[in-house]
Image (tube, rainbow, N blue to C red):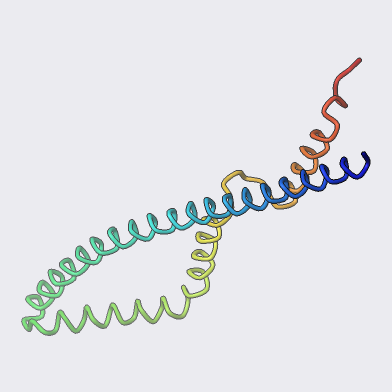
Length: 144
């Protein structure tokens, strides 16, 4: 008799362990899918809006270059002045905006990976421990 109960307990533990592993794998698959879809949609939005913004900037720049060229009576002068302005902006961005841009990107992408429930890892562990203790002693909170 005691051997049968031990065998049943071992079988139950094996099935519960298998269920746990399966559920955990499914959870991480869903979480990966969610994160990858959020990343993909944000990337597509960025590419679409960025390309439209670049077209606007491109045609606006051509207009300004032509206007400046007519102002200085030489068409190429406007293009050189505008190219010099963009070169200065590029160098300033390269010098001053590299670190803040990296931090902003890391923060944005880490927000995609972290769950949206708002809990810190420590709070998640504490909540899990509370739930496990409640499952082990379900009648502990009830008053007699």
